[in-house]
Image (cartoon, rainbow, N blue to C red; front, top):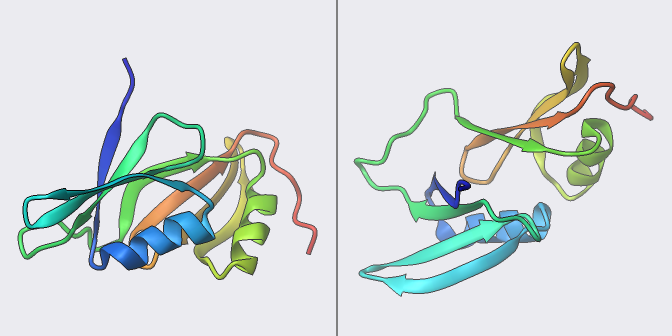
Length: 127
């Protein structure tokens, strides 16, 4: 058993697809008509767990802090943050080392904030 899909609410479906595929390097795994909307899923390459990007409507929840509750695991938060920053990804919290590993948060084009973690010990910033 594994988690297949997590819903991520967005305001602009195509803008979100562009962010996740072109900035983060993920892949679009499905884009099919679904009623008056589309069923779109994206995932890191080779991974099972996916986001379904769902267009936000008036009843869709919006977390005031923007934090999605999603944390992506990377080998080194410093290196990944450097790579993503060069692609224009906005970081809410710059990489830092905590007792439990490396940590940073970044924002997508739709205002969702995701955590980024790497196991301890985290790399040291090359800046």
